[in-house]
Image (cartoon, rainbow, N blue to C red; front, top):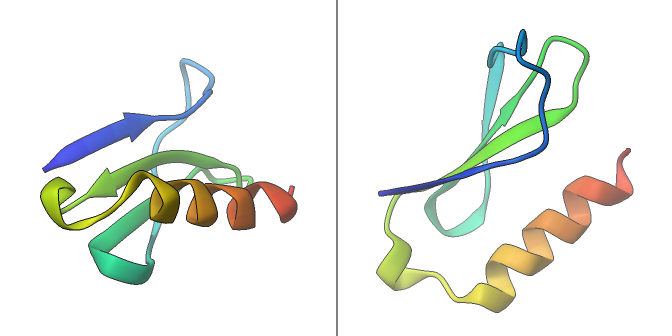
Length: 61
């Protein structure tokens, strides 16, 4: 597994986790901001897929 920490405040905790495509889990803070991405099988996902998922999340904010 791999975990990508996204910009967060020291007090942020994950209150919601959403499963994304290809075994990625996105953690969200209480205010809905994404704070991390867990990649359950890093060898099976391409950097392009990670970038596509991240771009889709960023468009929401």
